[in-house]
Amino acid sequence: MTLLALGINHKTAPVALREKVAFTPDSLVQALSSLKSLEGVSESVIVSTCNRTELYINAEYDCAGELLRWLSAFHQLCDDEIAKNSYVLTQNDAIAHIMRVASGLDSLILGEPQILGQVKQAFSDAKRSGMISSEFDKLFQHTFSVAKRVRSETDIGANAVSVAYAAVQLAKHIFAELPKRSVLLVGAGETIELVAQHLKEQGVQRLAVANRTVARATDLAAKLDADVYTLAQLPEHLKDFDIVISSTASQLPLIGKGMIEKALRLRKNMPMFLVDLAVPRDIEAEVNELGDAYLYTVDDLQHIVQQNLANREQAAFEAEKLIAAQVADFLSWRQAQQSVDLVRAFRERGTQVRDELVDKARNQLSEGRNQEDVIEELAYKLTNALLHAPTKALREAAAEESQAMTRWLSDALALSGDRPNDKHKGK
Image (cartoon, rainbow, N blue to C red; front, side, top):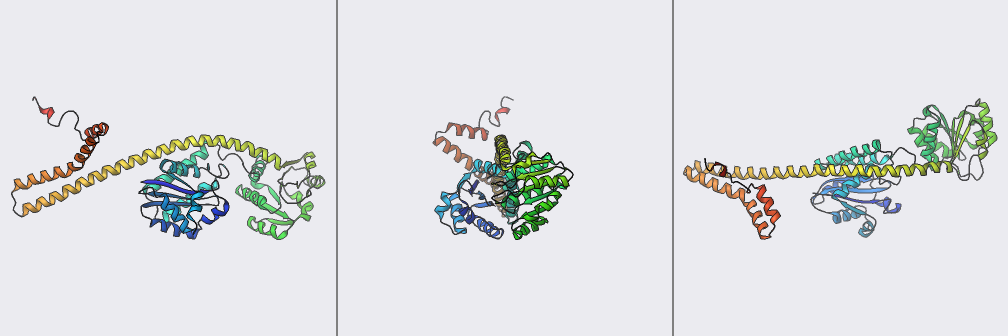
């Protein structure tokens, strides 16, 4: 059997093409059913995210060309367009790749954790579609175990590598009980939405959104169960929040030193943590002069992110070594399985031949044939049937002058050394 991975990802193709080859939940069911009908394909899993579409296939032979044509036809695209922007990995490389993907080592953001859940979902979808048998079940369960070990035994996911995540992690360090803190988000763009997502993951309950456009703030607030304010209401409500995170497109600061000074006075000097993710700045730099105000800018966070990226790259090096060892473990299991399958097939073939000849011998006896003749014929035909394949292999090895193969066959067939009856001589 041949393991293959055919894929397109953020490294090989622009988003315009990645969008075209992505699978929706509905089309995924249809795609798995279609793959099942491809000649030689026994197992398949489709991983489809915003950054990658990958087909993992267990097939009777290397069918990469057929898979590429299938993917092109399914999405009604030109074969060349897929071929120029895709990659094909086989056997050991395919196994290592799925482990790297699930561990976050092949992601746009090194070490991001969401991909493991996406691979698990892809495996579940394939299993429901009847496209998983013993080998892929073992491979993907082993992959999930490897990804878990990578996250627990290395620091691949320990450090923030986006300014939004860094802001939340910094807040977590300053306020020990982050879920109990109140947070004001100023702005309603993509960055603030990402910050909000991280805050909800940390269990923060009290959130508010302030924005120039109330309708946009209301849309975001609805997802967060948050209050909504206009920018004009900021001076009135700043005192109610422990954490303020701002990211707008304003050309002038929205929050000044005097505004924060007044809020701190009303808070009886309880500290405030402020993060300014905007360029130009939303919060005046002079706020840092206030004793109970802790202001961080996007430059401060970028420095943290760069340091954390370096730490993740070191962790990735450790993770690669762990994965290499786990690939070897899976290959050992696979080789052992193949040996078991070969032994089973060999024994089943021998049993089939025996049963057929025994049935024939019984029929001959029931017809009144001489017992001695029947036994001799049974022994002769059984010996010929069982020795035919080994005899052919020995002749071919001798004809090719392959001494290594001849010696191996000799040992395997117990032809070396003493013959069975030799040990009885001299007695």
